[in-house]
Length: 393
Image (cartoon, rainbow, N blue to C red; front, side, top):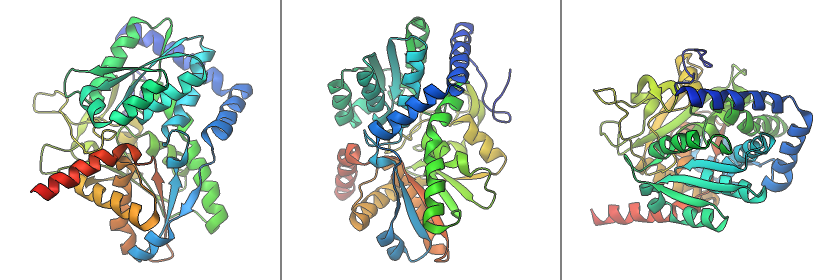
Protein backbone atom coordinates (compact mmCIF):
# COMPACT_ATOMS: atom_id res chain seq x y z
CA UNK A 1 0.00 0.00 0.00
CA UNK A 2 1.25 3.44 -0.95
CA UNK A 3 1.77 5.74 2.02
CA UNK A 4 1.64 9.42 1.08
CA UNK A 5 3.63 11.00 3.91
CA UNK A 6 6.73 8.98 4.78
CA UNK A 7 5.40 6.00 6.72
CA UNK A 8 2.04 7.70 7.30
CA UNK A 9 -1.17 7.87 5.26
CA UNK A 10 -2.61 5.03 3.21
CA UNK A 11 -6.09 3.53 2.86
CA UNK A 12 -6.91 1.16 5.72
CA UNK A 13 -10.54 0.62 4.74
CA UNK A 14 -12.82 -2.13 3.36
CA UNK A 15 -12.60 -2.87 -0.41
CA UNK A 16 -15.85 -1.09 -1.29
CA UNK A 17 -14.52 2.10 0.31
CA UNK A 18 -11.25 1.78 -1.66
CA UNK A 19 -13.28 1.77 -4.88
CA UNK A 20 -15.06 4.98 -3.82
CA UNK A 21 -11.78 6.59 -2.75
CA UNK A 22 -10.12 5.73 -6.05
CA UNK A 23 -13.04 7.27 -7.94
CA UNK A 24 -12.66 10.38 -5.79
CA UNK A 25 -8.90 10.56 -6.42
CA UNK A 26 -9.35 10.38 -10.19
CA UNK A 27 -11.97 13.16 -10.08
CA UNK A 28 -9.76 15.30 -7.83
CA UNK A 29 -6.64 14.93 -10.00
CA UNK A 30 -8.75 15.75 -13.05
CA UNK A 31 -10.30 18.85 -11.39
CA UNK A 32 -6.92 20.11 -10.19
CA UNK A 33 -5.69 20.21 -13.78
CA UNK A 34 -8.81 21.91 -15.12
CA UNK A 35 -8.41 25.68 -15.29
CA UNK A 36 -12.18 26.28 -15.34
CA UNK A 37 -12.59 24.32 -12.08
CA UNK A 38 -9.82 26.35 -10.39
CA UNK A 39 -11.23 29.59 -11.75
CA UNK A 40 -14.65 28.79 -10.29
CA UNK A 41 -13.10 27.80 -6.96
CA UNK A 42 -11.20 31.11 -6.81
CA UNK A 43 -14.33 33.05 -7.78
CA UNK A 44 -16.28 31.64 -4.81
CA UNK A 45 -13.34 32.16 -2.43
CA UNK A 46 -13.21 35.82 -3.42
CA UNK A 47 -16.85 36.83 -3.85
CA UNK A 48 -18.60 34.39 -1.49
CA UNK A 49 -16.06 33.61 1.25
CA UNK A 50 -14.44 37.06 1.22
CA UNK A 51 -10.83 36.12 0.55
CA UNK A 52 -8.07 37.11 0.85
CA UNK A 53 -8.47 37.20 4.62
CA UNK A 54 -6.40 40.00 6.20
CA UNK A 55 -3.03 39.52 7.89
CA UNK A 56 -3.46 41.79 10.89
CA UNK A 57 -0.62 43.21 12.98
CA UNK A 58 -1.75 42.67 16.60
CA UNK A 59 -0.06 45.79 17.86
CA UNK A 60 -1.67 45.93 21.30
CA UNK A 61 -0.93 42.27 22.07
CA UNK A 62 2.62 42.70 20.75
CA UNK A 63 3.18 45.73 23.02
CA UNK A 64 1.71 44.02 26.03
CA UNK A 65 3.86 40.90 25.64
CA UNK A 66 6.95 42.98 24.91
CA UNK A 67 8.69 40.67 22.42
CA UNK A 68 8.24 39.48 18.85
CA UNK A 69 5.80 41.14 16.44
CA UNK A 70 2.57 39.13 16.25
CA UNK A 71 0.48 38.91 13.09
CA UNK A 72 -2.93 37.22 13.01
CA UNK A 73 -4.10 35.48 9.83
CA UNK A 74 -7.77 36.38 10.11
CA UNK A 75 -9.59 33.23 8.99
CA UNK A 76 -12.26 34.22 11.53
CA UNK A 77 -13.38 36.88 9.03
CA UNK A 78 -14.33 34.34 6.36
CA UNK A 79 -18.02 33.78 5.63
CA UNK A 80 -19.30 31.36 8.35
CA UNK A 81 -16.50 32.43 10.70
CA UNK A 82 -13.68 29.93 10.17
CA UNK A 83 -11.22 28.38 7.70
CA UNK A 84 -13.56 25.42 7.11
CA UNK A 85 -15.45 27.13 4.26
CA UNK A 86 -12.34 27.08 1.99
CA UNK A 87 -12.44 23.29 1.93
CA UNK A 88 -16.23 22.85 1.74
CA UNK A 89 -16.47 25.08 -1.35
CA UNK A 90 -13.66 23.11 -3.02
CA UNK A 91 -15.14 19.72 -2.16
CA UNK A 92 -18.70 20.67 -3.09
CA UNK A 93 -17.51 21.77 -6.54
CA UNK A 94 -15.84 18.36 -6.77
CA UNK A 95 -19.07 16.61 -5.68
CA UNK A 96 -21.04 18.47 -8.33
CA UNK A 97 -18.42 17.56 -10.92
CA UNK A 98 -18.84 13.87 -9.95
CA UNK A 99 -22.63 14.11 -10.30
CA UNK A 100 -23.35 13.53 -6.58
CA UNK A 101 -26.59 15.02 -5.25
CA UNK A 102 -26.25 14.37 -1.52
CA UNK A 103 -23.59 15.60 0.89
CA UNK A 104 -22.75 14.05 4.25
CA UNK A 105 -20.24 15.50 6.70
CA UNK A 106 -18.97 15.01 10.22
CA UNK A 107 -18.43 17.86 12.64
CA UNK A 108 -17.04 18.45 16.14
CA UNK A 109 -17.23 22.13 17.04
CA UNK A 110 -19.82 22.56 14.32
CA UNK A 111 -17.84 24.97 12.12
CA UNK A 112 -17.28 22.36 9.42
CA UNK A 113 -20.91 21.32 9.70
CA UNK A 114 -22.04 24.93 9.24
CA UNK A 115 -19.65 25.39 6.31
CA UNK A 116 -20.88 22.14 4.70
CA UNK A 117 -24.52 23.15 5.19
CA UNK A 118 -23.74 26.59 3.75
CA UNK A 119 -22.08 25.23 0.62
CA UNK A 120 -24.83 22.60 0.17
CA UNK A 121 -27.51 25.30 0.45
CA UNK A 122 -25.80 27.46 -2.16
CA UNK A 123 -25.47 24.56 -4.61
CA UNK A 124 -28.93 23.15 -3.88
CA UNK A 125 -27.76 19.81 -2.48
CA UNK A 126 -29.21 17.62 0.26
CA UNK A 127 -26.99 17.70 3.35
CA UNK A 128 -26.78 15.54 6.48
CA UNK A 129 -24.28 16.28 9.21
CA UNK A 130 -23.22 13.74 11.86
CA UNK A 131 -22.21 15.23 15.19
CA UNK A 132 -21.43 13.53 18.50
CA UNK A 133 -24.36 13.91 20.88
CA UNK A 134 -22.13 15.59 23.47
CA UNK A 135 -20.94 18.10 20.86
CA UNK A 136 -24.54 18.88 19.81
CA UNK A 137 -25.09 19.99 23.42
CA UNK A 138 -21.81 21.92 23.66
CA UNK A 139 -22.43 23.64 20.33
CA UNK A 140 -26.19 24.19 20.29
CA UNK A 141 -25.85 27.47 18.39
CA UNK A 142 -24.06 25.76 15.50
CA UNK A 143 -26.63 22.94 15.43
CA UNK A 144 -29.35 25.56 15.03
CA UNK A 145 -27.35 27.32 12.29
CA UNK A 146 -26.96 24.05 10.35
CA UNK A 147 -30.69 23.39 10.59
CA UNK A 148 -31.52 26.94 9.47
CA UNK A 149 -29.33 26.33 6.42
CA UNK A 150 -31.46 23.29 5.56
CA UNK A 151 -29.18 20.50 6.78
CA UNK A 152 -30.30 17.53 8.84
CA UNK A 153 -28.18 17.17 11.99
CA UNK A 154 -27.94 13.59 13.26
CA UNK A 155 -26.57 13.15 16.81
CA UNK A 156 -24.16 10.22 17.14
CA UNK A 157 -24.80 8.35 20.39
CA UNK A 158 -22.02 5.74 20.22
CA UNK A 159 -18.66 5.81 22.03
CA UNK A 160 -17.65 9.11 23.63
CA UNK A 161 -20.34 10.90 21.53
CA UNK A 162 -17.73 13.31 20.15
CA UNK A 163 -15.84 13.97 16.91
CA UNK A 164 -14.09 10.58 16.60
CA UNK A 165 -17.43 8.80 16.74
CA UNK A 166 -18.97 11.22 14.23
CA UNK A 167 -16.16 10.36 11.78
CA UNK A 168 -16.71 6.60 12.26
CA UNK A 169 -20.43 7.01 11.73
CA UNK A 170 -20.04 9.21 8.63
CA UNK A 171 -17.69 6.71 6.94
CA UNK A 172 -20.18 3.88 7.58
CA UNK A 173 -23.06 5.95 6.21
CA UNK A 174 -21.05 6.86 3.11
CA UNK A 175 -20.47 3.19 2.30
CA UNK A 176 -24.23 2.56 2.34
CA UNK A 177 -24.97 5.15 -0.34
CA UNK A 178 -21.74 5.70 -2.17
CA UNK A 179 -23.46 5.99 -5.58
CA UNK A 180 -25.26 9.27 -4.95
CA UNK A 181 -23.50 10.52 -1.79
CA UNK A 182 -20.32 12.58 -1.42
CA UNK A 183 -18.53 12.48 1.94
CA UNK A 184 -17.30 16.00 2.60
CA UNK A 185 -14.56 15.34 5.15
CA UNK A 186 -13.65 18.38 7.22
CA UNK A 187 -10.06 17.88 8.34
CA UNK A 188 -6.76 16.72 6.86
CA UNK A 189 -7.43 13.19 8.14
CA UNK A 190 -8.83 9.89 6.92
CA UNK A 191 -7.84 7.56 4.08
CA UNK A 192 -6.05 8.83 0.96
CA UNK A 193 -6.89 11.05 -0.96
CA UNK A 194 -8.74 13.05 1.74
CA UNK A 195 -5.68 14.49 3.55
CA UNK A 196 -4.30 15.67 0.20
CA UNK A 197 -7.65 17.10 -0.94
CA UNK A 198 -8.20 19.08 2.25
CA UNK A 199 -4.61 20.35 2.16
CA UNK A 200 -5.06 21.44 -1.46
CA UNK A 201 -8.16 23.50 -0.68
CA UNK A 202 -6.71 24.97 2.55
CA UNK A 203 -3.20 25.88 1.35
CA UNK A 204 -4.59 29.23 0.22
CA UNK A 205 -4.15 30.34 3.88
CA UNK A 206 -0.36 30.08 3.79
CA UNK A 207 -0.09 31.27 0.19
CA UNK A 208 -1.88 34.50 1.11
CA UNK A 209 0.01 34.90 4.40
CA UNK A 210 3.35 34.62 2.59
CA UNK A 211 2.48 37.35 0.08
CA UNK A 212 1.01 39.54 2.83
CA UNK A 213 4.02 39.30 5.16
CA UNK A 214 6.38 40.11 2.29
CA UNK A 215 4.32 43.25 1.60
CA UNK A 216 4.33 44.27 5.26
CA UNK A 217 7.82 43.24 6.41
CA UNK A 218 9.72 42.49 3.17
CA UNK A 219 10.82 39.17 4.64
CA UNK A 220 9.66 35.77 5.81
CA UNK A 221 8.32 35.32 9.35
CA UNK A 222 10.49 33.63 11.98
CA UNK A 223 7.60 31.47 13.22
CA UNK A 224 4.25 30.28 11.88
CA UNK A 225 1.94 28.81 14.50
CA UNK A 226 -1.48 27.11 14.39
CA UNK A 227 -3.65 24.89 16.57
CA UNK A 228 -3.88 21.21 15.63
CA UNK A 229 -6.80 18.81 16.12
CA UNK A 230 -7.12 16.90 12.88
CA UNK A 231 -4.91 19.62 11.48
CA UNK A 232 -6.53 21.32 8.48
CA UNK A 233 -6.01 24.95 9.49
CA UNK A 234 -2.40 24.16 10.42
CA UNK A 235 -1.61 22.30 7.18
CA UNK A 236 -3.29 25.18 5.34
CA UNK A 237 -0.91 27.68 6.92
CA UNK A 238 2.21 25.48 6.90
CA UNK A 239 2.18 24.10 3.34
CA UNK A 240 3.60 27.14 1.56
CA UNK A 241 6.21 27.72 4.29
CA UNK A 242 7.54 24.14 4.49
CA UNK A 243 10.19 24.84 1.86
CA UNK A 244 11.32 28.06 3.62
CA UNK A 245 13.96 26.46 5.83
CA UNK A 246 14.47 29.55 8.00
CA UNK A 247 10.81 29.58 9.09
CA UNK A 248 10.13 27.63 12.28
CA UNK A 249 6.72 25.96 12.48
CA UNK A 250 4.77 25.05 15.59
CA UNK A 251 1.50 23.13 15.92
CA UNK A 252 -0.35 23.46 19.22
CA UNK A 253 -2.64 20.69 20.43
CA UNK A 254 -4.99 20.32 23.39
CA UNK A 255 -3.50 19.31 26.74
CA UNK A 256 -7.00 19.54 28.28
CA UNK A 257 -6.79 19.23 32.06
CA UNK A 258 -3.07 18.44 31.85
CA UNK A 259 -0.68 15.98 30.22
CA UNK A 260 -0.40 14.15 33.55
CA UNK A 261 -4.16 13.38 33.48
CA UNK A 262 -6.24 11.20 31.14
CA UNK A 263 -8.24 14.27 30.09
CA UNK A 264 -6.27 15.56 27.13
CA UNK A 265 -6.02 15.25 23.34
CA UNK A 266 -2.24 15.58 23.01
CA UNK A 267 -1.80 13.14 20.13
CA UNK A 268 1.63 14.28 18.99
CA UNK A 269 3.00 14.62 22.52
CA UNK A 270 1.68 11.39 24.04
CA UNK A 271 0.34 9.32 21.13
CA UNK A 272 1.97 6.58 19.08
CA UNK A 273 1.85 5.26 15.56
CA UNK A 274 -1.23 3.25 14.58
CA UNK A 275 -4.28 3.03 12.34
CA UNK A 276 -7.39 5.14 12.95
CA UNK A 277 -10.13 6.28 10.55
CA UNK A 278 -8.54 4.58 7.56
CA UNK A 279 -5.05 6.09 7.91
CA UNK A 280 -1.74 5.18 9.51
CA UNK A 281 -0.89 8.11 11.75
CA UNK A 282 -0.29 9.00 15.40
CA UNK A 283 -3.13 8.53 17.86
CA UNK A 284 -3.88 7.99 21.52
CA UNK A 285 -4.29 4.27 22.24
CA UNK A 286 -4.86 2.40 25.51
CA UNK A 287 -2.82 -0.64 26.71
CA UNK A 288 -5.05 -2.98 24.65
CA UNK A 289 -4.43 -1.05 21.45
CA UNK A 290 -7.91 0.51 21.34
CA UNK A 291 -8.33 4.19 20.55
CA UNK A 292 -8.59 6.05 23.86
CA UNK A 293 -11.28 8.61 24.66
CA UNK A 294 -9.74 12.10 24.56
CA UNK A 295 -10.84 15.40 26.03
CA UNK A 296 -10.55 19.14 25.41
CA UNK A 297 -12.69 22.16 26.25
CA UNK A 298 -12.59 22.63 22.47
CA UNK A 299 -15.00 20.38 20.56
CA UNK A 300 -12.79 20.90 17.50
CA UNK A 301 -9.55 19.66 19.08
CA UNK A 302 -10.74 16.60 21.01
CA UNK A 303 -9.82 14.18 18.24
CA UNK A 304 -7.74 11.09 19.21
CA UNK A 305 -5.64 11.10 16.01
CA UNK A 306 -4.05 13.68 13.74
CA UNK A 307 -3.63 14.15 10.00
CA UNK A 308 -0.93 11.82 8.61
CA UNK A 309 1.09 14.70 7.17
CA UNK A 310 1.43 16.21 10.64
CA UNK A 311 2.73 12.87 11.95
CA UNK A 312 5.27 12.93 9.11
CA UNK A 313 6.29 16.57 9.69
CA UNK A 314 6.93 15.75 13.35
CA UNK A 315 8.86 12.63 12.33
CA UNK A 316 11.22 14.57 10.04
CA UNK A 317 11.48 17.33 12.68
CA UNK A 318 10.18 20.03 10.32
CA UNK A 319 7.35 21.04 12.66
CA UNK A 320 7.46 21.12 16.43
CA UNK A 321 4.27 20.17 18.26
CA UNK A 322 3.48 21.74 21.62
CA UNK A 323 0.37 21.56 23.77
CA UNK A 324 -1.61 23.90 25.99
CA UNK A 325 -4.25 23.30 28.63
CA UNK A 326 -7.91 24.36 28.82
CA UNK A 327 -6.96 26.99 31.37
CA UNK A 328 -4.20 28.46 29.18
CA UNK A 329 -6.55 28.50 26.17
CA UNK A 330 -9.32 30.25 28.13
CA UNK A 331 -6.80 32.82 29.43
CA UNK A 332 -5.66 33.46 25.83
CA UNK A 333 -9.29 33.68 24.65
CA UNK A 334 -10.01 36.41 27.22
CA UNK A 335 -6.70 38.20 26.65
CA UNK A 336 -7.11 38.55 22.88
CA UNK A 337 -10.73 39.65 23.36
CA UNK A 338 -9.77 42.37 25.83
CA UNK A 339 -6.52 43.55 24.26
CA UNK A 340 -7.37 43.44 20.55
CA UNK A 341 -11.19 43.38 20.54
CA UNK A 342 -11.11 40.04 18.69
CA UNK A 343 -12.96 37.06 20.19
CA UNK A 344 -11.12 33.96 18.91
CA UNK A 345 -12.44 30.42 18.62
CA UNK A 346 -11.37 28.29 21.59
CA UNK A 347 -9.46 26.11 19.07
CA UNK A 348 -7.43 29.10 17.83
CA UNK A 349 -6.96 30.24 21.44
CA UNK A 350 -4.66 27.24 21.96
CA UNK A 351 -2.31 28.69 19.33
CA UNK A 352 -2.63 32.19 20.84
CA UNK A 353 -1.77 30.72 24.27
CA UNK A 354 1.49 29.34 22.91
CA UNK A 355 2.30 32.66 21.25
CA UNK A 356 1.77 34.38 24.60
CA UNK A 357 4.47 32.13 26.08
CA UNK A 358 6.83 32.36 23.12
CA UNK A 359 6.69 36.02 22.04
CA UNK A 360 8.13 37.54 25.26
CA UNK A 361 11.20 35.27 24.96
CA UNK A 362 12.04 36.60 21.47
CA UNK A 363 13.68 39.84 20.31
CA UNK A 364 11.44 42.64 19.07
CA UNK A 365 12.66 42.24 15.48
CA UNK A 366 11.31 38.67 15.29
CA UNK A 367 8.01 37.99 13.51
CA UNK A 368 5.30 35.45 14.36
CA UNK A 369 2.28 34.61 12.20
CA UNK A 370 -0.47 32.78 14.06
CA UNK A 371 -3.51 31.37 12.33
CA UNK A 372 -6.67 32.74 13.88
CA UNK A 373 -8.61 29.83 12.43
CA UNK A 374 -12.08 30.84 13.65
CA UNK A 375 -14.14 33.26 15.67
CA UNK A 376 -15.39 32.59 19.16
CA UNK A 377 -19.13 33.32 19.11
CA UNK A 378 -19.83 29.57 19.21
CA UNK A 379 -17.67 29.17 22.36
CA UNK A 380 -19.09 31.88 24.59
CA UNK A 381 -21.40 29.47 26.50
CA UNK A 382 -18.58 26.94 27.04
CA UNK A 383 -16.24 29.68 28.30
CA UNK A 384 -18.94 31.01 30.62
CA UNK A 385 -19.53 27.51 32.03
CA UNK A 386 -15.77 27.00 32.51
CA UNK A 387 -15.40 30.32 34.38
CA UNK A 388 -18.50 29.69 36.53
CA UNK A 389 -17.26 26.25 37.51
CA UNK A 390 -13.89 27.70 38.43
CA UNK A 391 -15.55 30.32 40.67
CA UNK A 392 -17.49 27.59 42.49
CA UNK A 393 -14.30 25.74 43.45
